[in-house]
Length: 207
Image 1 (cartoon, helix red, strand yellow):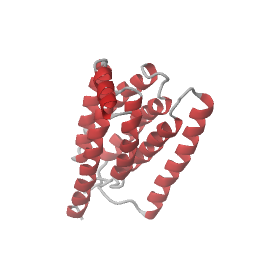
Image 2 (cartoon, helix red, strand yellow):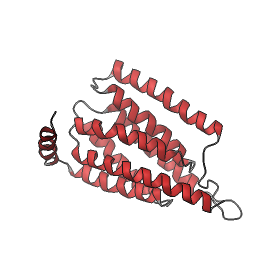
Image 3 (cartoon, one colour):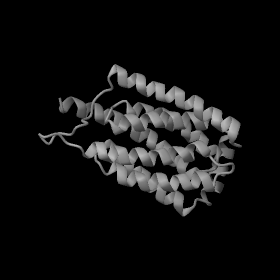
């Protein structure tokens, strides 16, 4: 596909963006912005965005992006869990989960979640659905599952997992014709890098 073909496909598909995509995109951008700022509003804005995204992936995509749809339901559950974790404070009013790097065990758990999740999701998509992008769909989902887990614990490595997930999600959403989501993931890629940089600085100043 030439650059001209890509441009014309982008313009054509962009004309058919639905309101759910607009609202979801705006809410998710706000959520990532708040995450970068270590602000608990990351979760209520994220909940709105992921529920609408799940609707788009299940009800609009042809064939549906099953893994991404289920992933957004997982985001919802983890957002509730993360919201609870981020609001917890100790007796001295310090956060129970401050920004920090993963321990060795936490890294092992994260990578285990990724590889096991990738294998299971790929198998389910391949055997039980009509998905025509099982490898990319399962990669986006499994890396994002790990990212969301680390994020709920305020681990800096969550941004590295998001960077990987976004890199895969960009061509996947473009291929499916979701141009607004494609642009959103490009922006997320930039914001994830900035978030990684900012959290590293915050972790040093809080110690």
